[in-house]
Amino acid sequence: HRTSTSMLNPDTWKTANNLSSKMMLYVSIITCLIQLSSIILAIDVEKSILYATLFLVVSLIFGVVLVEKELKKIFDNKGNRK
Image 1 (tube, one colour):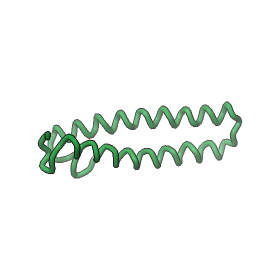
Image 2 (spheres, one colour):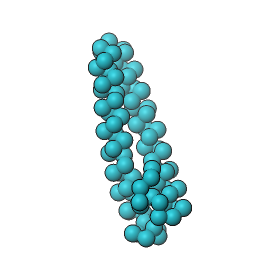
Image 3 (cartoon, one colour):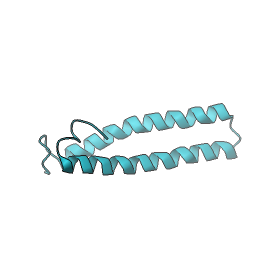
């Protein structure tokens, strides 16, 4: 997670990457569940890949926004904890 807010200091960097890695783990698990459910429900392979990819891309973009919001709750503009 490399953004201007996350790179203010080592504390913001570590916090941002911890939050981001947890978010990525959840997104990966849900993506796998989407693909498994499409196999069980016999959904077309191309549609399955499309659904999983769309979910993954949207979730990762949304995740960046959520991590940045959380950083702004925890840190001020200079990277000091509130």
